Image 1 (tube, rainbow, N blue to C red):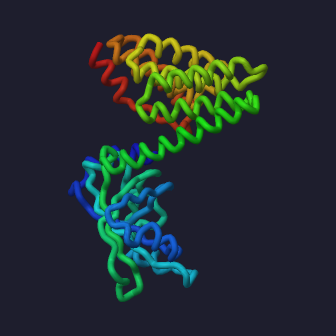
Image 2: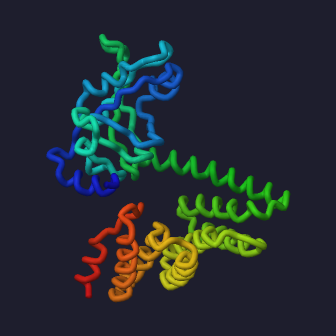
Image 3: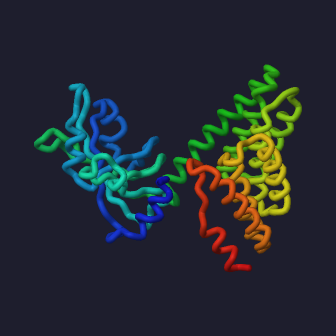
Length: 309
């Protein structure tokens, strides 16, 4: 099962909305000093799935596996507030080969705040670090994310200018799309639309181009129109992208199914229940062709539409 599905089952079953998990690891001393020690109040992000345990002793066991004497044994004690956690997480002990580890898995990109770092190691040579849940609406997190996005935006704009000067036409569409993506994340939808349209325009000028890439750019244009509440325009672009994917993709391709699902959502927002139901049913039919599809259907979408008819 996907983590999102497990999360939807696990979260309502929690006996307590606030609980503690533990993560033990051995990390280079320089990383501990620069990123953890003395960084109280700062944020820490995990760029991969985060495996934790409900058992502190399990975490300490992992922390003690220190092969390099230059490494530090660290245990993160993480207070989880389920009502503030937007990213998926779940107890996966049932599916683990090591059920006694009582593993709780968090999705990629989960962010926590460093609440406290012990002044000294425990008697068994472990640094204890307390972390807590950070909402994605947290002001400090939003400021840091915005700063990163602005830095990336400037970088992509510089790359785009360099490619134009060098007349490197084949790379210009992707650079336009990167700039558009950064504007979209900043909520600058008009600028985002402008650069996505430029990406599509420059792609169409190439003698040969990948149709799937074209469908992606068209979907991006549609996505911005949704953000701008231009729903009819969004539908036109999504249908154009869908037409390309129908000819180029396998029937159970996740992008094809996702496009159908998105069109269904737009129709549902327009209260065109029959059209929405048609899209959801088509998406579900394609998904049932393969049990290994990466994008799993949300049956509640069809249920909600039936209720509205």
